[in-house]
Image (tube, rainbow, N blue to C red; front, side, top):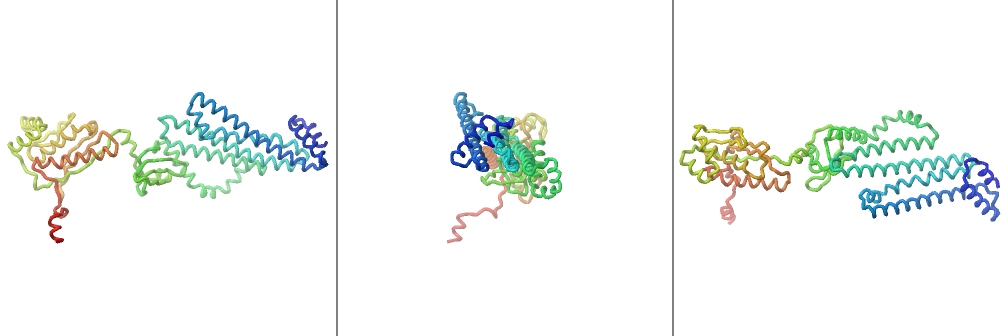
Length: 433
């Protein structure tokens, strides 16, 4: 028949296509429809479509079967992730349109317009399938890159989104150029007229793209960092960094999203340095009642050193040197005097902080008196804990304040407490009665 002759005369015809066309032609002859050329083309097209998807399905099953066998034999994390992420399955999506493009022309040699339309549709599908496959490969590369300990917390996901966006833009331009039979270069030239509109539509993506590059280049943000962004409710750990949003889980377990360009255009506080140093700062103040600060004599000093022998070397050294203050800048510089009970208490506080096993002695330790206020004389304790764990940090500073607030009475001191803030429960009960 005519169709078979066309297939046989075509130098690009394959034996499979000729055999398939011959079977279709014979089948139509058997039912008396051998002159219906359009019907022959439709049947061939349907068979090619079904065959293309069937072959793709079989190939996916074979690939997955082989991969599962390899995973069972080697027990590799990479193979398991390939199966879990369906990377190879998505890559196989390109098979149907390629088979269709290879087989379709043999049935439409005499219908060039129909063939052009079918090829453009199949080509568009091929570009989309290519994008899906490349996206799956990028996801797998991102996963494999994240396996390394030194790169796991880097904001690579934003770069991945940028790469995916660029890939889809290129694929979209090529696919549209194919459908409309235009050069991609001409299409890009025409898009220049819509640049302003595109910038408005993709404003967040463009700003996020620039911010992502700046954050990655300057190493500003990692996944898992504790950040505080002023002017926003963000105060917690970074869960994810994407092209358009930074996801933060606050300490109350609420989730806050912040645009990346907000972090670049404004300031934010990152506690990564604190975590990496392994120590966390304590700045606490004990406000001493000025009415309890007094000079001490030898008997007072002896009484205090009898209770706290740790002060005896300090007191003896000052007595021998005839000094009233010491801060020699050594390993454990003691800031205190033997002139007042507050000076002795400062010296004891220095000893207590320096010898506390939960305090990092390699960091700055400072005990100092601040300007007196109407509420008393503040004594500031500045030091660093040897841990960044929140529970332990709070326990350490609480125990420190509790101890110092208690022992100050042995020095004849008291922490200021406004009488207007205290309530005698017995008097209150009597008043109610």
